Image (cartoon, rainbow over all chains, first blue to last red; front, side, top):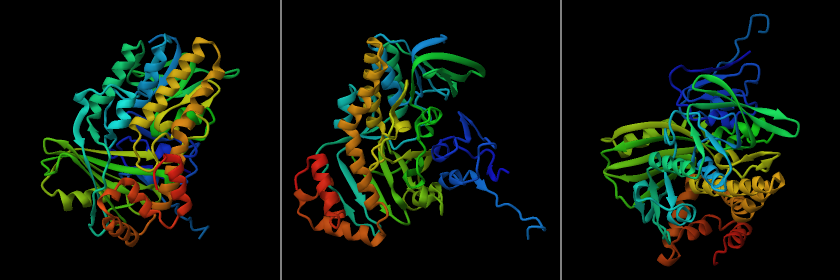
Length: 67
Length: 390
């Protein structure tokens, strides 16, 4: 399940996240960014390096059964 | 756009354009594919270069120069100011014009440049790669090339697709926020660098004059520090403090791989140059001229390999890079790794000690010698690698 979220209309398309992504899981065009869900391992490196805090890591919600 | 070229260059930054220029100059058919709609835009850079490096790689056009720099002002966390003797001068460039002209020089040498050309994959062949897949003005295309150059910047996906590990480690990724300010009061010949945990943890904040009351102000912090607080917050805090009355003309993000060069610059018929090859000086974070040197070396090796129909000649490029620049960058990287985590007290102590030196010893080299005085082995390595006097 993809836990990384991109805040809409905040990205500057600089490529910093792509540079640290070990899975090549980010597609970045001139003014378009998306995460390739099948490749993303939710390692969150992209979230940590983003200069503009565009990427968010959503902690998985535990279901009642797990809790 | 044709269906086939000798050389496909992905990315029209300084490294890609310079590589294209030198490859095309010997008669190769070269295409440069740029994903953005314009070359040189947006500017994600501090724009500073040393005069000596720049004039070695290109004939300088005065239109590129926004300011000529004769002084560095290093500001410690407590506000002590060290002005080391530069032993030369530098420039703050107007990269919009600079990058554009480098692309023009490539075109004059015979290359084609296409913007809005987003390369999203390599086409495999039996022994390497036979071309690239791209979206060109919204249309899907495939073009063939005998040699493919990854000049795709910090993203560096061409290398990854070819199986080269171009991922930048978090600690080596300097994550940057930069603004162009107007209405600022600055001396037009001084670059300022601010250090300290509250200003720019594991990096520095720069204030570079651009003339006419304008400045390029930015901050780069390590990915490790960015985990706690993003670069843009440090920059906004600083500007509110230092330039409360300034107008903000642009705000951009960026990433600079301050690492050692990737260990595979050439794989089969894939060649990596510039930020994509981690050719940035890892100490300063400057990558304009070093990327252009990489591009030139690669372009010349490509021209020779094509002329003699022998792709093994591409290996001359990594050999020359290592000899001229790569080895130095490894030392710079060791220096960076030694100093970038210094706590504020250590930085202030270094500033105090440098200010106590006699003026003729107060050079950039003197600053590093002072900073690394507890690591004599590294100082000795600096002496050897850079040929500096003790």
